[in-house]
Amino acid sequence: MTVPFTTTGNRGLDLEEKLIFEQNKDGRTAVDLPEPAAHENRLGAAKRKRAIGLPGLSEPQVVRHYVRMSRNNYAIDAGIYPLGSCTMKHNPRLNEKMARTPGLADLHPLQPQSTVQGALELMNELARWLTTLTGMPAVALSPAAGAHGELTGLMAIRAALEARGDARKVVLVAESAHGTNPASAHMCGYQVEPVAGTDGGRVDLAALKARLGPDVAAFMVTNPNTCGLFEDEIAEISAAVHAAGAFLYCDGANFNAIVGRVRPGDLGVDAMHLNLHKTFSTPHGGGGPGSGPVVLSAALVPFAPLPYVVKEGEAFRLVEHNGESDAKPYGRMKGFHGQFGVFVRALSYMMSMGSDGLRQASADAVLNANYLRVRLQKALSLSYDGPCMHEVLFDDAFLDGTGVTTLDFAKAMIDEGVHPMTMYFPLIVHGAFLIEPTETEGRASLDQLADLMLGLVDKAKAKDAEFFKMSPKLAPRRRLDETRAARNPVLRWMPPSPAPRAAAE
Image 1 (cartoon, rainbow, N blue to C red):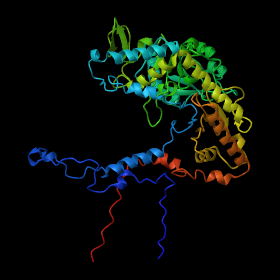
Image 2: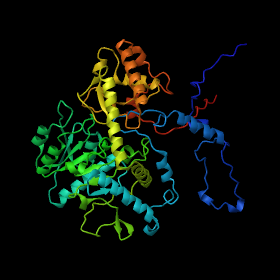
Image 3: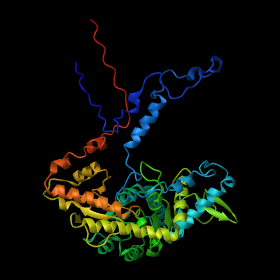
Image 4: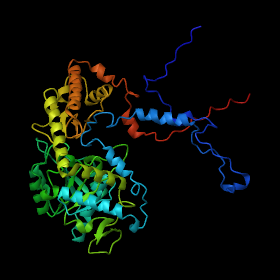
């Protein structure tokens, strides 16, 4: 008798994995715990009356589950990660070793300050590096990530305006700025208005000047912007904003392109957040750990949020409440003092690279993006002519008439073992392909990515749209209904409902 073969769903050594709750078996455990003696059970009415709701698995099952799950992740340790505006660069293992140093890894934020002098000195040294690199007089270390940093800077701007009795209502945001900028301004209570860009992908200075007025609190710009271009009129922009009595907020998520080469403070910037998990190589993705310190101009220093480190003689301490000086901090942005583990990693990176190394890294990031620009621009449609900064932006015009979309192209890249670039962003470019190789990648890696993309372009222009529509074929999952997933997220596993009992005869 021939037994029919049932496929497992596995793909080679990538095994199809059930949810951990679906592997549950009552009585199975990975840990042996002794039964409490009868006289030790003092729980009384608090004793659990039903199952705890956690799956029962053996130790090998637990290990295999998480190893298999990890194989479904793509990471910078696996290959090039060309997400535009995200700066997915190598995380040096030296940084991880430093973050695990005894005396740093086991600190508690409620320890007496006399017992954490080394940690406070580390935060003070990190602040010194950040203010030196940006040319700004002060930094607030506590914000947890980029958008949190945007809110921090805007709240400092709001506090400064209110202190001078000039409560304004509008924040202008460049169309080429990061997408979180308008959300942060709205959360801070401002009305948000866009400022158009030029055909060259930069801020329209004339349009900005025409809109500036006594109701404008700030102008938010990203520099280099999300088109991968440096705002070459930034000094004129700053002068116009300040002449109108407003403040200039610069999104520093793309600081990796200019660190060691341009000091934002010299350009008239009043507030700028710095993504330590982008520019300074700390781990990125998976929801954290992020860190978004905000550097502030002299006009905003008195309104910096708490806490901040000060040095008195040879000792360091945290200023954690109002009334210690003429400063007028508006409060706290975080429960404690910031993402300390990220501080350690970032400072380790800075000190190991040195100022010359940081300057070289930004040059290499720009070089790599321009190398891809030159290699791809004849086959793909470049959105803006001329050299770019740290990332290169293409649109989907080269796919006209092929039946292939930006999404289709990206899904086909997955089957080739490469994480796709950022798609459909910035929104001002139709069907955007935003590619940021960072300084991490060598020429061989860039050529591999370019060759892969050029091969897919040829396939698209050969009108093989079905190949793209069926991609990815080799990923653990095929295409998901992303619209439905966003509108009806299923965030919790629920056991299936028991089958209804048969009606009594």
